[in-house]
Amino acid sequence: MEEIKSEINLENIHLEVKSIAQTSGEMKRNMMSLEESSTLSVEILNENKATMNNILNLLTAMAEKDEPMEDEEKDNVNSELFSLLETMDFDIKKLSWFSEENVKVFNTIVAQADEIAKLSEENAASTYEINADINDFTQVSNKLQGNIVRIEENSSRSVDMLSENRSTIESISDLLLDLIDGVKQASGINDELDGSSKQISKFVDYIKDISRQTNLLALNASIEAARAGAAGKGFSVVAEEIKRLSDSTATFATEIEQIVNQVIVEVDRSNTAIERCTTRTKDIENAAQKSGDVIEEIQKVLIELNNSMNEIKAISSLQVNTSHGIQSSIAKVSDAVDSTHQVTTNTISTIVNQKAKNIELLDYCTKLSEMASNVQKLTAKNKNKNEIIFGVNPFTSPENIKTMYVPILNGVFKKIGYKVRTMIVKDYDALSEGMKEGIIDVAWFSPFAYVNAHEKIGIEPLVSPRVNGKVSYNGYIITRKDSGISSLSGLRGRSFAYVDEGSASGYLYAQHIIKSEGMNPKTVFSKTSYLGSHDSVIKAVLSREYDAGATYNEAMEGAAKSGINLDEFRIIAKTPDIPKDAIAVNPKLPKEFTALLRQAFVEYVKAPNIKSPVEGFVESDDAKYDVIREVM
Image 1 (cartoon, rainbow, N blue to C red):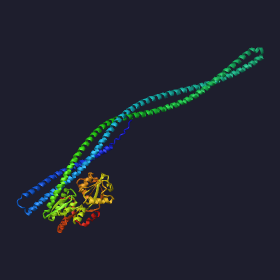
Image 2: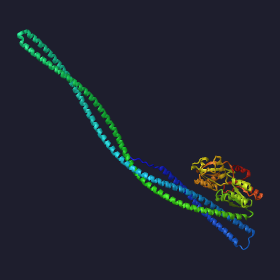
Image 3: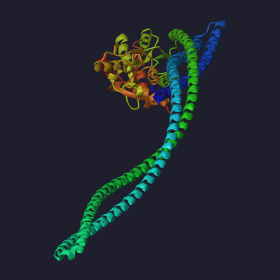
């Protein structure tokens, strides 16, 4: 029988198909996220359109006024314009955020589609090989079935031949038994003949004895005849005849004795031969009996073998039918894989085109955001006396800032008689630059950004937020549990995502931890990027866009509340306690305002309707951030 030389590794195909299914599932989730993001983007654009219409109407109304506006009217118009610009800036920032997220999702989807295309192509090649192997397997199965049929026929003939042979051996055994009986009878006859020969020998002895006595009587008769003389001549003749008869009898008796002795010798030899023949016959009988037993056992084995061959024949028939079914199924799978590969290729082309459009949209949003920020800056310079510009870096999404932090700021500033205008800047450095330009009055700094701003413009912290009863937090270095990374040393040659160069947990402490392990953060990774927010880092690691990233505990807790499963992550490093963010005031503002604002923050109590992790604020000072300076 031919050996199958090709290896059909269905386990690898199963794993690849499972990987495709998993990647497809992730792609589907990303598509759904993209769809949701696109829907929100459309809603934001509609809102922004309405806001811009309101701005346009306001500006048109101002332009159509024939008389100059009073100061109060100017303040109201300026305040309304600032509110509209603030709303528009929030919307544009949200749109930029979603566009940036969309580009990242598109990058992930393209990578996933490429992976699916690669696996599909590999599976296509594998299915071709398997198809060829199955064809060979089918041919071998057919040959195997033919061989099994022939073996079954030979086995049946062997059983029949053994049955006949067994009958023959049983007949031989019967003949041997008859032969033994005949030999026994011959032996009995020989025994009788031996006895008769011995009887004849006795008779011969008697005759010889009679002959001697007759011979003696003849001798005596001759002597008496001689004594009688002429009267005894007739008697002498008789005596002479008797003597001759006696001598003849003696001679015949001697010959008979010799013949009888020869018969006895031959009978003895015949008995010896018969005994030897009897012994051999018994051996032959025993051998025939054993041979019969062996043949009976072989017959049983062959019958069982024949039954097994019938079962194998049935299995072989099923195997042949199954192999034909597999052959047909593999052909269909091969066609489906080809179709999947083609569809995936087309999808990649569509996604790449859409990705380019989203990049254009992101560029447009970025420019629009810069324009809105510039307009907002111009408006901020003409703010009312009771308005405060509060700068925030997008450490989380604009939507979270608007729902979690703006209500708190509104409450705090309202308490001291001010109206807060929130301005989301592009990064940490923009906060200190805004203060330096006199645009931003108060800002929410990360610890590291505060230390840098303190060095640049001399700001001092007012308060720090209290979250979950703590005024400190812990930085994390995270990875996926299935990344194969279980310690910091496993980061070598992997991709890594930071938040921002101004982030303590998202950059500074991460670099410090990596250096403390004897690795150079500039060369240890295959790729690094700054994603701008902790949320983006968490999502990028979750989607496998990056192997690991730097973030902090509260961002992870927030991600869990948004539906992300934290069980998919592994924390491979954790920092000591890091002092929380610093809220600082522009040094140009009056000290009285600074003291009043500090007191308002310290006395703040979160309202039940505000969904924010911030529970309150505690006074802070510059010395608390020396721990940041130690690792810079």
